[in-house]
Image (cartoon, rainbow over all chains, first blue to last red; front, side, top):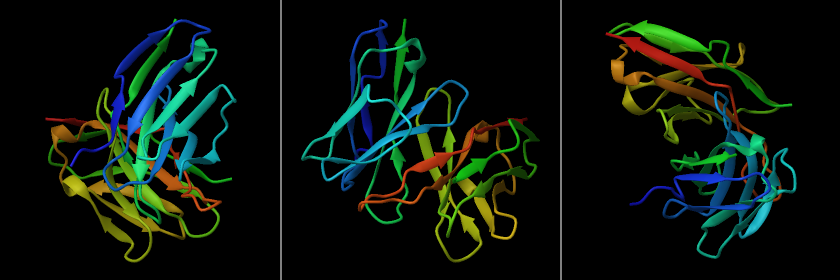
Length: 112
Length: 117
């Protein structure tokens, strides 16, 4: 049973560009959450998708957007990249109720 | 506002000795608490959770955590540390959800555990 997968593993972009990160949830999971982890910090919640809708959002600007597909996979899009967007982006999946979230290995984004 | 505090940036332990990684929380209502471990250049791995029930929760790799409501703490423990336990440990609390969604996780800043032979 595959766990949460994310692509790409690493990405280098230039300021002002746009980026799309992808996530496939663990089998049987229907909820996907995205987190940003800056160097030396704990993960910060970006947003959560359930039933193909953004259900909750953290304190991130509108440059951060996402999508969830009918197969529960998800994308995170970041427009007009800033140097401060350099971080590890983590996707987590879960299934309803009080169950724990399972994390993917992350995508390391570097903005130059 | 809900929050998690991990007061120690680093914990150093000799192999074979017991270890404790501290976590305190602030949350309205009943807390849902979690511990995750992160190895270098990796995502987070789930260790254990407290939802309700026994205050002592057992998890993966011999780890356990003690929930103390009066002290609003959820300390991670292991009776005998291994060198391979060296990693970054995160405590998290689940925020309240809305609109049919689960609440997101609020993480502490992490504690680096170093176990020396």
